Amino acid sequence: MTKGRRGAILTLAGIAALGLLAGRCAPSAPKGAKKAGGAVSDAAAAAMKVYVAPGDLDEYYMFASGGHSGQVYVYGLPSGRHLSTIPVFTPYPATGYGFDDDSRKMLGELTWGDAHHPALSETNGDYDGRWLFINDMNARVARIDLRDFKTKQILGPVPNVSGNHGSSFVTPNTEYAVMSSRFSIPIPKGTVAGIDKYATDYKGVATGVKIDPKTGEMSFGWQIALPPFDYDLGDAGKLASDGWVFFTSYNTERATGKLEVTSAARDRDYIAAINWKMADSLAAKGEGTMIGGVKVIDPAKNPGLVYFMPCGKSPHGVDVSPDGKYIIGSGKLQGVTTAFNWEKVQTAMRNKDFSGDEDGIPVLKYESIKDAEVPVGLGPLHTQFGPDGYAYTSLFVDSAVAKWRLGTWEVVDKVPMSYSIGHLTAAHGDTTKPQGKWLVGLNKLSHGRHLSVGPSQPESSQLVDITEEKMKLLLDFFTEPEPHYAQIVNANVLKPIEVYPKEENRHPLAVWDVKDAGVTRNGNKVTVKMVEVRSTITPTDFEVKEGDVVTVAITNIEQTTDELHGLGLLDYNINVVVDPGETKTFTFTAKKKGVYPYYCTNFCSALHQEMQGYMIVR
Ligand code: RUQ
Ligand code: CUA
Image 1: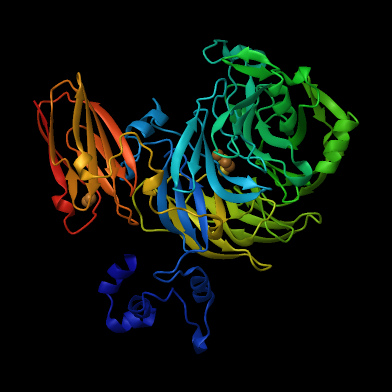
Image 2 (image 1 turned 90 degrees about the horizontal axis):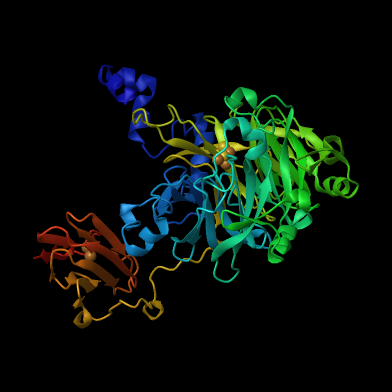
């Protein structure tokens, strides 16, 4: 814009001299693509690496949390193209989510969620492409089926959990997704205790959400009461540390009020190490006290269940290395990230090498369990891993990514991020088999990196090539608020369907022949069976009486890829979208007398506009 305006008042010679003309005439060549002598510049080399030609496909999927938008966003990498939005905790008119009976029921009374950490299901510690789990701060976890990229279940709100931030990290064979409470409260919910009782009467909790290995169905597994700290991030142990799950915590001072001051008194806070296999068998034996409708296990009465690993200072991310041998804890108020040696942690547990306890939970001796304090830089938050023994840590304060080596602990490279990186994600970067290649910095600020869109700016994501010794920033792309964490999975792991096969549709109200469409009445309950197929909605009209409770069941009988139909019912706030082979229902009371048009909302054929009908309410 600036260039154009400035260009208008310059002479042609002036423009050419400034090199502006060249830039304008060759829109496909990135700025400064050609160096003198015709050599390909760094920018052109970068462009070639991320360029996915029209009709070509990306190599990786990136699933990013949508933060308080309550959605999951799907990107292709390396292009950074936004491919799809999967609504999870928030209605999304584009796919009709939150308008039909099933999704409304799933959402319940909450029409927003704050999603932070997607977790792809795993087999042997690597992504298996079956499901994607994601947390919501409102004590919920959702499951998305990657066969059709749809949200299938929302579990919760789970009793006693308040502010489910440290979630939904899965164990290596997807036995559990976990939850933890960022905000300690008196439990069960509804109990009142003054803030002066915080240190004694408030509790944190950690919860295991059990996952059915065949169906992915989630259910309550176990819950453990913890001291009133703020539990923040988590990760499951793997290989060497399989059977354990780790949660960072801050405010181990048990302070209240202005936490930015009051919770920073101690040099070290903790990582809670929880033996989930033990929790699993304790829960199976019925151990625990009923609180808020679930059994809550007391770790003080069950030695070996929970230990605290001291970690400085106000740690945020905890990340387990691909072999499970190192637990990396990043203290956001420090200049180092701490590598704990799992071997040493276990030895300290066995030898009762403790420096004290918190409400009966042993605190391991810091000097006995840490291997190194890696000088990564200021404000380390999260760590991901490559296939070659390298680790990558995001530095919020330094606004950079540090690359360092596990075992030798040397920091070998840094790449600046624009700006204020939070999470980072690498291809399979939190699994037992990291693929390297791509890393994405998920930055909190994007100021000036894109055309201005007013005060509400998108977040910036930056793609980094990690194939070589030196990291290379290749691409900026932008996301809606706010990708906390994201995971990158090789496209060959996923096998999505494109139509729902007719023989799989067992919906009781499905109709596959327009002859079977129509209206049936039972008292004031009216059922309308509807068929959508290019380019008619059958029936093209129907009548009900004022006050009737109307259920409309729409079947899209298409079996062709991408032949979606929608249904908008004017003045009734109804909008659903039905994929090929799918049946959806919506129910409403015909409160308003009159004639109400309905129509297909999804442009489906040359006669899409003709796809319409009338509801007459007498
Ligand atoms: S957080 S920027 Cu919600 Cu995962 Cu670390
Ligand atoms: Cu069906 Cu437009």
